[in-house]
Image (cartoon, rainbow, N blue to C red):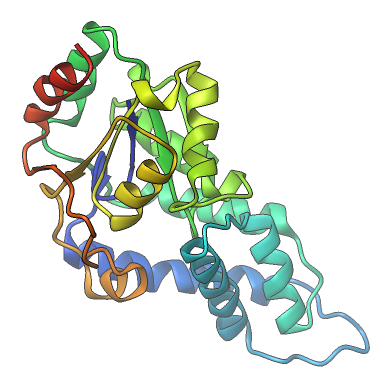
Length: 250
């Protein structure tokens, strides 16, 4: 089984999510502002605008199924701001920011993963990360006690693909050694369902138990777009997932 992260295994309350979006922009701007100016170059945008433009470009690339690393985003922000890029500083600052954010385990996530593991299911994560470094997110997942059952990771920040591209799903299955016809994906976004279908998964389950989104997040990622055809399985309680999985893959 593969799982989405945001609003599936982990989430932020809407008010916290709004602060998260604003503060992430401030962190990006602060880092870019510290970088030395490039002699003979023009500052096309302020550090605030440059960091935001690079982030929005990554988010737009995701909608086309393309992953963009934070190192690439740092280079883009530096170019726009007329600075020398120091991607390691960009990644380090955003990792600290993510680890300090009040991210929470979705209700019942640990119990669900533990039960699936006990039934013999292998578990991987397939997630789009347009503004977070993979290393920071892994630390969060570990701190929340979810990591022991996760055997493979496919994160768009670390790969050339993003959901809804089928390649990011297939990458995770290769790591798990599982064919798509023996795989189930769980996620909250239309791209979770559409991407898993394109990859040939046995089933894609839409999870709606943590669907209270911050306004900024909802505007940017559009998680409530219609899915055609509608998914057969829509759940609001992660406790239902193991029984559905056993019915689909006895």
